[in-house]
Amino acid sequence: MKRVFWSGFVAAAAVLCGVAVAQQEYKSESGSWRFVCPAEWNPIGFDVIKADDAQAREEFPDKTFTYIAGFTMGPMNTKTYPYILINKTDVDLSGITFDELDEALRMQEPDNERDLDLLLLGVNFTAEPGSLDRSRLRVTGYYDDTDAQGKEYHATLYTFLGKTQSLQFECYDLKSSASQNVAAFREFVDSFSMRDDLKFVAATGAGHYDKSNYKDAPRRYSSGGRSWRYSGWGIGVMVVLGLLKVFTRSMRN
Image 1 (cartoon, rainbow, N blue to C red):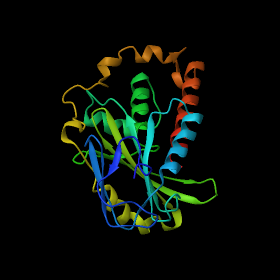
Image 2: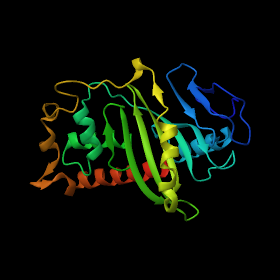
Image 3: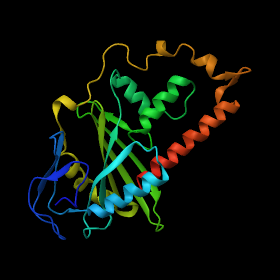
């Protein structure tokens, strides 16, 4: 049992084996959150998840999230499409409004310091522009890519927002059959619940990213009348942002 989940997750039902078993409930040891694994899904083995996370830490020592679990409709100890990886991210959402979250998720290119901070906040939740479901406190994003074997895949990212942590379900399927497993992914994700006292609570009024907190932004991001993006400093920032995009996407492969 302990070799299936790590970072505090435990199974609350049947003993796991190499084939799919009855529907099971999984929860953190502290009771912070829980979800139900449908019967047709197999847990991805502890060693596979741990190896993925160790490789990510070696390549990106400053990464902000940790893989804690995985499930597949294929054999256990594989990542056969369709499959789900679950990661936990430490992120401080105190003092942030819903409007600021929406703006962060739509951010494409920063024009000043505030926009840059919002963009980096959005990168915590999705590799591409996402949408916020305020009632469920859930961010949904999508992207397409090609894996190491040359297969085109589609990824749907469901991120549940907490006060100091988020939990994300990374749902992967072959691009050619992505529409076939939408219901299966939703059955999995829709069972998730977070303890009420840990859920994100949106600020009211002026939020953390209120423009009045960034009065010096235009002066710091201009050079000789040119946009900051074309200054030497600005180009450096854009390179870093590009690397962040690549890093975030690679973490979801």
